[in-house]
Every structure is written in C-alpha cells, then in structure tokens.
Image (cartoon, rainbow, N blue to C red; front, top):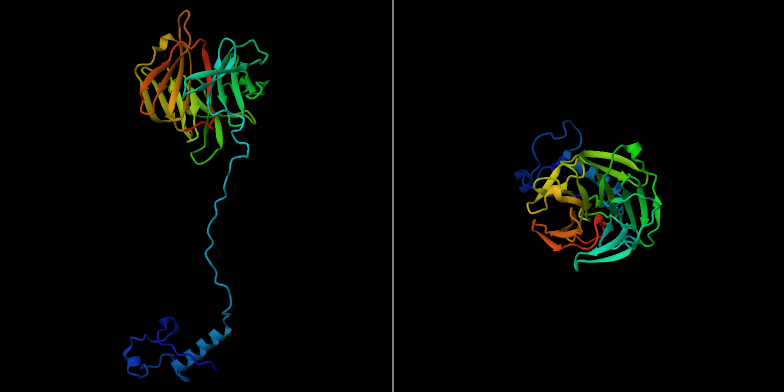
Length: 315
C-alpha cells in the first residue's frame, strides 16, 4: 500500500486543517467523524486517497486554454491595382473623363466615353476594381472600365426600382475592412444598390437633394447644396440619420447653381460647382475637416457633372 501523509490538505477530503490544535499537539480529533463504527476516519481517508492517486494517469497532458482566433479578411491580391487613388470627374457636355489630383489641383484627361447614348451624364461613382458607374439623364446606368473606357449598359432599370435620378458614392463598411458598398441618394432618400443583382434597399430619408461620397474610414457624406446655408453632412449608413454637419455659409446661392458634384480625399472635401452664366464653367472649392471653405480653382474650362473616388483613396 502506498503511504500518504497529508499536512496541508483541504477540507474537501474531510481532513482537519493544519491549524487544528489537535493536529498540532499530535492528538487525534475528537468525535466519530465517519458517522459509524469500524476503521478510523484518518485510516479510511488515507487509503481512499492513495487509491485515487494510483488510478491517476500522471502522464496525461494538461488541457490548455484555447485562444479564439479571428479569421482575417484580407483584400484580394489585385485590390486597387486598376483604380487610381485620385478623384475622377466627368464633363457634362462631351462625356470626357478626367482625374483630379487634389495635391496639385491638376486635371488630366483620360478620354471620352462612348456609351452609345445621346443622353448627357448625370452622376458617377468609382469602385476599387477599376469600374466607374455612370448614370445618364434618362437614369440608365453604364459600367465603364477605367483602363480602357470600355462602356457597357447595365441591366439596372429605374422602371423596376422607381427610385428616380440619384447621386452615388462608395464607402467601406467600417474602418477595419476593405469591403465597401455603393450608396445612392435621390431627392429625399438614401439607399444601397448592389451591382451584382441591382437590388435597391432603402435606408432612410434625407433632408434634400444631395450628392454622395465616402471613404475607407467607413464614412458616408452627403453634399446638400440647396439648403440655406449649404451643408456637408455625415450620414449613418444604417438609417440615413445625420451624424455630423459642416455648414457652408459662403457657398454660392442655390438659385445660381447649374451643376454640382463632390468627393472626399485625404480628409478634405472637393466641391465642383458650376453657376449659371454665359462663358462660365466649374469652380473648385476645398472644404477642410474643420469646415474652412476656399475656392482653389476658378473657371476650369469645362462643366463637371459627376465626381467619383474609390475607397482606395487616402483618408
């Protein structure tokens, strides 16, 4: 028999603590602790404990806590390879596509879209894969490959959705992911539009007619040029409620605005505004993150009707 001496066992075994005065002076505890006759409590417990130790597999591995591993969601290998991180703008009169570099304020012509329609373009959004979505005045929607300017009409149908004319822009789901969605805004509603199925899901109501832009921080912004004063507002992507407001008291009078578009880039906003008047063309305004607005270029020589920036752009 394996002898077992226990000097600091817990009371789970039914043994007295080493602080028990009877154990300190070498005498046995008083009373019949096993509740009946026969062998003493100390002898029975020692034999039971020894048997338990003999039955224990001392070589058994100790079970360790397993950490919860969050599966990563990396962007595709060619993510953003076919899309400039600059702003794209579209001329209304000749459908010419440009890039706009906010760091230099320069426009670079990429070519003229030939989508086989007599309609003028109305708005534009750009995704991460090198595709620009261009809405024309009849609310038809075309896919444009930015590398080649190849233009293909989509199966989107305003007759089916009944959403009407809209502005649009992409925003990531949040600041931790590359995945983004296409948001659209008509005269008073915000919705998502899925280019894979052309399913339109309405999210909530907007204060007035707006254009949209978004970024890789998960922010979605709307330009409200018809408000008094005009505003830039950050929208909740779940219900279209306003999260933040930048007032633009020096913005052109709404009754003078002929065409407008805007995009965010590296923490600032760039507004492309064409006012009515013979011989005039689009002016470019910069609005900083703290709301300071200044005209950075005047009368650029063409009328911007759409602006798009992918979520590959710096934030």
